[in-house]
Image (cartoon, rainbow, N blue to C red; front, side):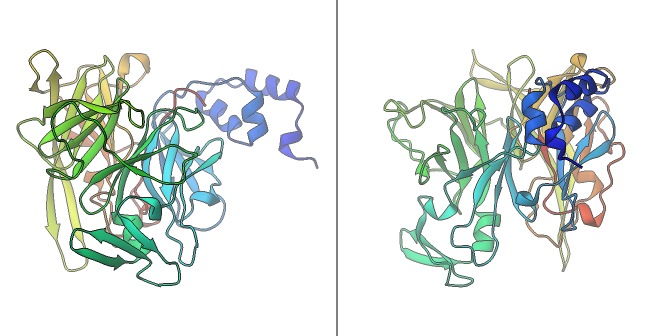
Length: 397
């Protein structure tokens, strides 16, 4: 029997023409690279949750569909056992902490097409003095104002790369990659073909801004072509990163009632929002459990440079987690209700594999009445725990 990739294009076109389900069309394009290249692009209706499975066999992952309330099964050995660090434009950023690797990976992967693009490794970040793979459990040596210290690679990759976002699809030449990294939540950037990461600094129009001043950065988002980076006190707006005229064009105060975590979001109508997740922690000997209690939303007034708390988001559906935050109007998606937040656990706080994802930390929050719902057909069972699932969205495959 021949390979699936050898199926005649004319026959493949006929099969695609008779598929009525959008999800079935996505599945056909996920069979192999040649099928995806031959068939016309399809619009993905809503973000999906990429979830790793515990077993080492096929399938290794699943894409959970809100529309069909089930998983599309995927074979992604490159992602098996890796840590998610972000998701933008349909690509997932992941890092590898496999012991004994000379060059520990940081890469972006499209889970549908399976195309992978390497990024510069963690030891090329500005805070690293040296990396020695043979120095087991102390592979990394870090610089500090008072000297240096060593740390194991597993800790570094889990804790000291917090979030990575992309300015566009990494297949485009102008794609910029920005990361929150290190003990102090600093920023660094690179392009896909670079040899290392560069500290985010340069010429600034707002005084003596330094990327290490103030509190650590906690979220980043490309909004209207500019990087917005939020810490507990401020939102810093960067422009022309990597260019000769790189600068900070604005420094905004954060909303008055800061909670952790907080997410920068662009609404479906183009407004800048901040979503604060109200949580409660329970410390136990074996684990720390976090429970999501509420969400607080704030809208930015660009004229008065102020924030206003909002109690609802109308028809919008908001998708929060470690991904670049997303928002869509429910009017475009038959059967979906607006004024809801679809959220998943955030590994920046979910730090240890011994923890469990509780039902209150992944699901749907109804802003109208303050209630929580579970994802239909999605079960928080032990083999679905690590890493926590991440939203994946691209307008086209």
